[in-house]
Image 1: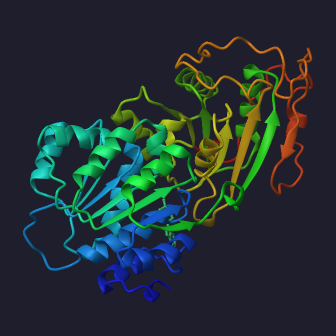
Image 2: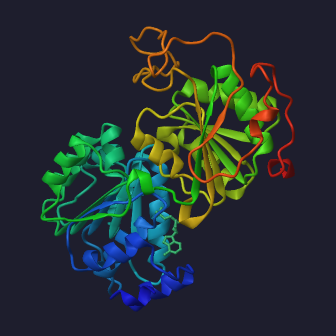
Image 3: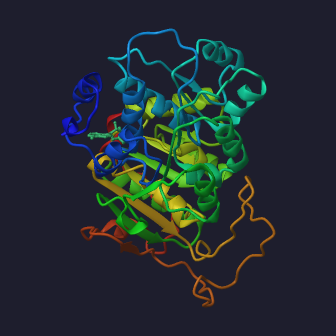
Length: 422
Ligand code: AMP
């Protein structure tokens, strides 16, 4: 019960309004410590309810009568625009019975409109590092009175090259009293360094590890001979798996566009989301997916970071992610808030230990074509029928019996049950 926490009654009212009954494990662990003002380092995946775990204590600190605002009191930094937008919505939902005002600063939005919003001085500012820094450099942002700072998805911010920007913003919040750092993974040396610099005597709450992630998500791999074969498997999966909404991940924009084009040719209602898309396209894609008008999203990692879409129950890794962390983030799109999910990874011989750096065009950077597979065995010639391997508890399926025997001949599209309703 949320009433176990020493939260203001207006916040408990909002929690009840949202029909949150039981706190999630991360909330149960983090909220009492955060209410005490402790610095926290929390390892918890997206979908675990971590947003409420830091938002409720922040609101509890700031709650009070209506007053003229003179300074920003809390800052929440996130790696992507979508994640920042979702966090703003969550803050607004929890603060609906209070006078607390929040604002959003992300790239892709009008700079002057943002500056005008900043002049009104929100209590809580949510944003992505790049644009926040631009507003700071333009003299529009004063973080000197910030009391609480949250770095959400800190591991991802580092992956995306925001380390310096984040540090600069952290330094601006010089008089902060509390810092909370959340990451989906335990991270590497970069994260450890950041933790050492920004947190003071933090409590470390480790709510998950890679092996425990997504208990409700079944994970499978399907072996494929090459990309064309993968495309056939994707067609088969979309036509035959039972799902409400699906997301297909690729490592490159070029591949995302290619798959999107093929799905459109097959008359699927789909959207593509990657770094070349402007903010309007991204918003439209996510809104349509949320509303259910579109049921399939093809995306690169950066674009789909932090997506929280109800009913997203199938993730297909067309390309294997380049790191275990990325895999965790991707499959975290499904199986959220205890719902069932299915994560399927399509694997070619070159996917493991393959090139780390890939150009946006999809070509490897400075890596010659490999002649051996991941185990060092010589690549066998001739296409094989793909085999589907169970990673988690998954009932046996005859899925691949429908993929042509040589794994090559184009498959006829069968209308999928869920998307056929579109
Ligand atoms: P998050 O990990 O913060 O992105 O939360 C994932 C989703 O779970 C969001 O849609 C939240 O609104 C929802 N959620 C968070 N906490 C609870 C809770 N205690 N009960 C039910 N839903 C929750």
